Image (spheres, rainbow, N blue to C red):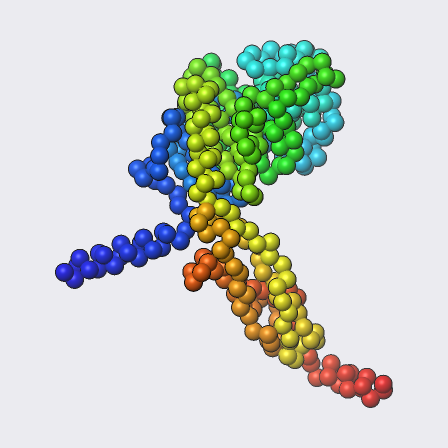
Length: 381
């Protein structure tokens, strides 16, 4: 009986613990199944995986490859290495790309911004290669950067052989659904990408060549923001679909669906479930009060709260309240960043999370000569 009781207590403790944290579903406890070889649903601000199915299986990604291509390009843009208004001359090699394209001609010039628009909206392979050559000198050199960037993100199931995802001649060009979600999350940190990925229709070449987004969710799914589709006979139909509602941004990755419509429905299924089940709580942090400093060169200093982003079950939406706990007085000396109290995030009687409150400024102790000078000033006045 004692053994059974001990086991019951351990199980109860386990269940109570996991009832208070976001769930990362194991593959044998999925809440439902999606019609795809592999899938992942990730919340972007926290990186929490909400749903996974064969998430680490390395599979051909088709043009979803371009989330990594675009990440490196946007990093070059933001660093100033690739100005958006830079005119790029198209090489013969870039112009020779098959598949989705905007039919660039050898020697044709187009701005980096226009080429990025072509890659994001129309999945243009020729534009992707032209940008890669501009950034790294050649597609081969750019592919090396892609593999290095994957390694820097700790990704072990992604290997790149080109910048486009064309896979007729590839041997080991693969990504996993989880890796795609991680790379998509990094790409989403570059706000400029959404100017293109949220666009349904646009044009280049002074309006003479129309572009239509390959991602139909942009037009037909509430809150859709991007991000990249892909399909080949080897990869089947893939997508990294992003959407935002009520301040929560989700990433749904689908790989290996049999048709475009099946892929899109699977992505919508994941996104619908995520929005219905979870919510995000944010506290921007900052000054939350002041304390009096005894024996300090400054009489008061501020108390700071760190920013926090938490993923919560939808049932807790609106119920979380921060409680700031700190003494109103402290003795000098104090160091900036020194813990002075605690913030607790409470829902009902449950503490969801906590973090230290800190001193904003260093405050030195008053010395003998400081006191003497103060007394002399008082006498003179």
